[in-house]
Image 1 (cartoon, rainbow, N blue to C red):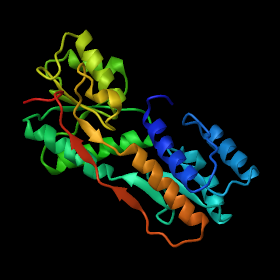
Image 2: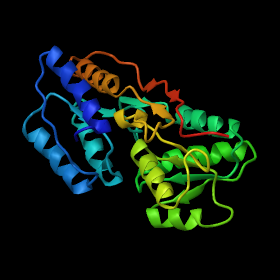
Image 3: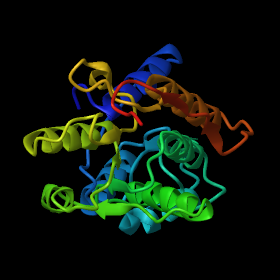
Image 4: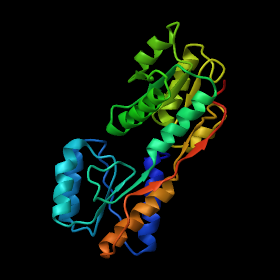
Length: 252
């Protein structure tokens, strides 16, 4: 988790937990449903006071329902929940993707690509962009699920002039692929990311992206969970306002 998005969220959780006198057990599941379910069982066996969950698989939903039935306090962190009655701390991703899309359109781009990861959150972001472009009378973005599809598309005469990465990591991979093909960013193709990880501002990337206050998200998740543990009434969901960071990976 070094230098990763979730590492910073974990820092925020740990800081708030320590501040309030709570210890912290961490389970890494690698987006694997069996690992998620094993970890939830382990936490319950250890009689933890509460659980913060992020980026779970659809197969894990029945286990979350059982947690709710057992009245185990838990919070969903940075991931849309299946149940509106479950507390969630999440960036307003709809607003974030619309900000990015509006910025790309303002530069005159009409043929847009989207490089994504095979998970629920990635497809959610893609669908936001696709619907938003449709509302504005533009074609839906071309969808790439791997390097090979991206490379093949960029060899075509009608290749996109702007490509959105599901995350900063995917945007950086886009930049490397384009460089290998002799395509300049941003002079030939504009590229955007999402998360504003620390290397997004490195000179070789200068990535236009969406800033997520990752440590703050972690701290808020821990605060919300502690309030639940203490039996307090809480307001939910908690949506965090996104911020567009414009650097030099895009141009007209």
